[in-house]
Every structure is written in structure tokens, then in C-alpha cells.
Image 1: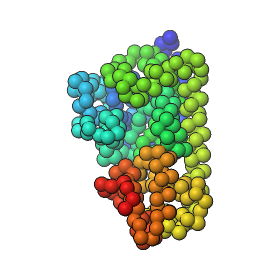
Image 2 (image 1 turned 180 degrees about the vertical axis):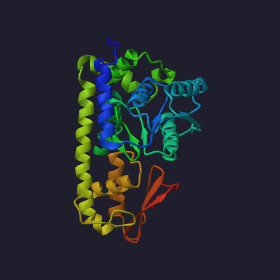
Image 3 (image 1 turned 90 degrees about the horizontal axis):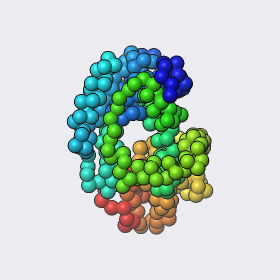
Image 4 (image 1 turned 135 degrees about the vertical axis):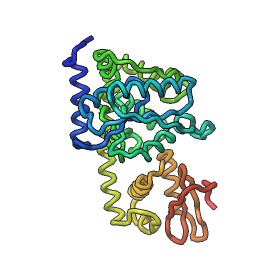
Amino acid sequence: MANSRNSPPIERLTAALAASLARHAPPGARLVVGLSGGIDSVVLLHALARLRPEGLSALHVHHGLSPHADAWADFCADYARSLGVPFRCERVIVERGSSDGLEAAARRARHAVFARTPADWIVLAHQRDDQAETLLFNLLRGAGLAGAAAMQEASGRLLRPLLDVSRAEIAAYAEAQHLAWIEDESNADIRHTRNFLRHCILKPLVRRFPAATRNLAAAAARFNEAQELLDDLARLDLAGSEGFPLDIARLKALPEPRARNALRYLLARQQVAIPSEARLREALRQMLTAGVDRHPVMRLGAHRLLRRRGLIYLEPGGPSSESR
């Protein structure tokens, strides 16, 4: 294992980080690193503290789900202090009875903190193996092309500069720099879907196909390019009507795949989570085929899609997902 600052893993990771910053975050940008204390975020903060210390700070979200959560917060505070990086810890309450599981509930709580954090970029440590896991997860739950695109390098104020860096390269960097990190015991629990994919699917897959994660991540990048082209098509089809309420006649004038693409685009602009491509098809079918005396309502995550007087509306909340 290399052990100097000029070793290949350090050069590779630093180059990927510098290239991402050059694309998205000019000098002077306020960068807040999401610091969990795990190896990925520890390496990210270390590399950023050396590459771009100006305007850099760290944020730890205390989920309170582990008996070690307080110790993890203390570790993160001490680590940031050792690098001379300002640090903040924010506690959240995670909905334990969420219908979509504890992982999703924790993610929502975490992203709510990110949304109210003053910064130009919230910098996250997702890497290439995470991207491969996300692609598989989304495909297996029936997501469409947007889900197959997995995570983007830059999305809103979220920046993921290590998506082209492997877990092995991050581990090599950490060893070369003699870094310490924490291990979340829940990462070994294969009852969690992502852990199952990591330990029971991807590890055997990589043993048979060593380039599996690299190729899956590359496929996600190509899916993202295709999704961007479909977004361009949606904007053309909508011809400036890029919001709700939407005239049903505009969608009816389009072939079904293009109408579905336009609806998906509008929902994505409103940050509506679409559970699956099948759910999107059903939403479009209900909106377009209901009789004039019917007012279909369909639940999409925390929103309701409904039809009234020839228009499609999007509203928050609502108890029903059935046509009425």
C-alpha cells in the first residue's frame, strides 16, 4: 500500500475532487460537508481541507438511531477541529414508523437539515460504489429512466464530487493519510435494502465481474444524459406551460410516451417523488381517461394529483389515492 502524499490514490481522489469543484464551485463558494464520521465523509473533508479550506465547514446530522450516536457526534466535532474546519451538529427526530422504512425516513430528516443550511453547496461523500447500489436499487423498485440515472454530481445545492472514485480508492487514501473513522454497526445489517445489495449482490458480482461497479456507474451517467434529452423534449411539448394547473388538452394532444414524459418532468420540477414508472403510467391514465363527471385523485408521495374542470392540479397532502 502506498504511503506518501504523492501516491496514486491520493492523486486520483484529489484530481477528481478538484475537477468537480472547477465545474461547479468557484473559489469563494461556501462549502458545507455532510460529515457522518464514516470513511467516505472523513476522506472527503480531509481532502477538501487541503484543497479548498476557504469557506469550508462541516455538518453532522445526529439521527439518534444508534446507541453510539453521541460518540459519533463527538468524533466528528473533534475531527473537524483537528483540521481547523468550523463544525455544527444538528439533532433530528426520525419517523420510526414510516411506511417507506427507517432508511428513507432518516434520509428525509437529513435532507431537511441540508435544505435549511446556509451554503452554496452541501458536499456529500457518495462514491462510485454507492452509485452502482443506487442504480440497482432504483431499477429493482421499478423506477424509470430518471431513477436509472441514479445520483447526479450536482443536484440543486447538493454536490457529490466523488462519484467517479471507488470505495477501494477511498480506503487507500484513508490508509495513506493514517485517518481514523467510525463504523456504523447498521451497515452490516442486511435487513436494510442497500446493505443487502452491497453485501449479498454487488460483492459476489464484483468477484465475477471486477469492473461491475465502474460499468454500472458509467451506465447511470449515460442514463442521466438520456434523461436530460427527455427533459428538453418535455419543455418543447409543454411550450411554456411548465407548471400546474395543466390543461389536460395539452397532454391529450401528445402520444402517450411523450405525455407521460411531460407529466414526469412537471412532477420532478415540483420535487414530487414518483414511486415507480407503473405509478406514473396509472396517474396519467386516470387523469386523461376519466369522464367529465369524474374527479380522479391520485396520491404521489406527500402530494395529490387531481383533475378538475379540464385541468390537472398538484396539491400537498391528502388522504386518498383512489379515483372518486
